[in-house]
Amino acid sequence: MPDNRGCYRQENYYDARRDIGSTTVRFQLADSVWWERIIDRPQRFGDRKANFHGAYSWLWW
Image (cartoon, rainbow, N blue to C red; front, side, top):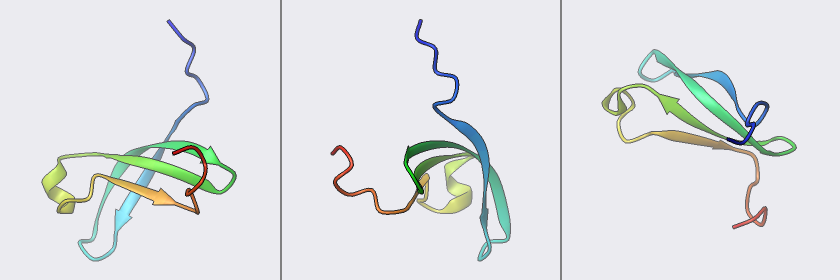
């Protein structure tokens, strides 16, 4: 089994409009670029399931 330590970390997401937060799992894609998956019941945040931060175009897809 591969060793995935360091590939992700636990973070938090807060939606100010709804005044709720949740735990996320964040994956660093490049310097100052990350993708995070919200770990919660999907309906709490409407259709939002994940967040991107930074300029990720041309990285690898």
